[in-house]
Length: 282
Ligand code: PDD
Image (tube, rainbow, N blue to C red; front, side, top):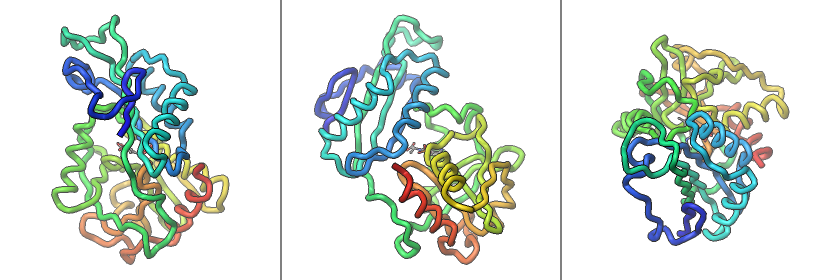
């Protein structure tokens, strides 16, 4: 595959980064994953805006504008066959031989982008829908989960808890027992035909899929939507549970902690939500 590193496109095997890079030594960087189907990106502007906000929060200087990112990503897609691709963008603070914790002021960011094959666009079809089984756990990550940091060990360890049990995702609850998100997804529940998801906070990544879905439900459906705290009991007693992310779009959860969600099948509002997503996502 062809990748981008610091201003140049090159074969993946030619891309070299110093082990002194702060992305490697400290996890000091910001990343994005943008889905792209046949050359069309989903939520491109929102993804770039979140990237810029993360860089600003970490005071990482990166001079690429939204237009620069657009051209970079378009070239990357063309050079990699323009199929179904996940576009990975990564900006680390850069390389510094001193290994000092404080932000060095005299280094320039390392900018890396590559893409990988992803599944075809998810369909709004109950029979074909992937069925997700999840576990619950106390959220043991840090207090800045709204920053899409490359330091993902907290998320990785939670995800591994689920993977070790043959499950697809670990959904997390704060110390007070309120839902935050999944290890790599945002979480929605449905109760009595109302779609509910936790409000944005520093304990949740502001998911682009989450925001697109909320906008679509409000603008193009009569389905009632609430952003409010969700207790663990509400998740366990929900009529439907969904996960959202760039790669999954809206995914139906059929089992939580070994117990079926309602009748153990993707629900009718899931079908409507994924239909809306398919219609309006570009
Ligand atoms: N994960 N929450 C977390 C912790 C995530 O890592 C992600 C995305 C999401 C969903 O965000 P979005 O809808 O913008 O993809 C929520 C990406 C895809 C990943 O790390 O692979």
